[in-house]
Image (cartoon, rainbow, N blue to C red):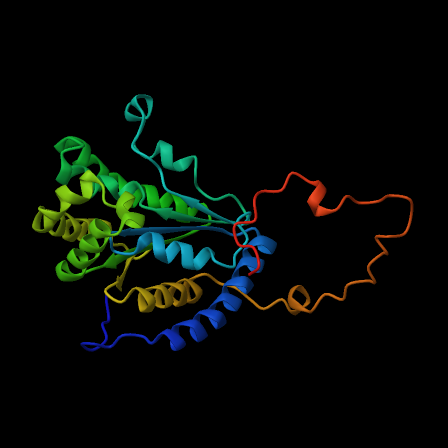
Length: 273
């Protein structure tokens, strides 16, 4: 499921920026198609802590319309949500026609994180593994396009990223107590991930594994994988340059706009030398 490059095969910054610019235009075409045809697209991002899920989502969203694309990153369930059918809290965030939803972690918390951390019972875990493929089949039968990404990261690369978070005050918030516990439970996470692949990788909703050790390359590969799997077309009329009419003279009439110095401006922290 995962095709890797050779050792040291790191994408160059210039290549990354050039490729990303081209791919963003393709994403814009996809966005226009989804909006016009009222397609429903749900994309799941799973992986270990520090695998690069959030960075991939931010890259996809960089030039996109937040009214078409939505990011869903749910906090831990409330007391009320714990008594619901497990999938219920996620159903409320599924896409309607003309929407693309990016799940930064998803219902698959119950497949790996929750059993490893002891946040669910054995029965809850077993029931989830039986229900997940049926739940996803219902989504697909309803006309939804469902993509499931697992971003792979090696133990050495994850440790480098954890150390970076631990030593960079700007990233300290990313290092949670669960991250630190998961650091000690690498093998347990791997076993549950393998079991998840075995029981929830279906023809209708296969797992798409991305090598995430090179973040830039992973982001490009994820975008290309999305473009390969969500049908879209080039609607030329939607992308033709817009010819703006002449702008009205703002000084015409009796209204005098106040100068910026008369407004309640914040301090200029960067005055000219």
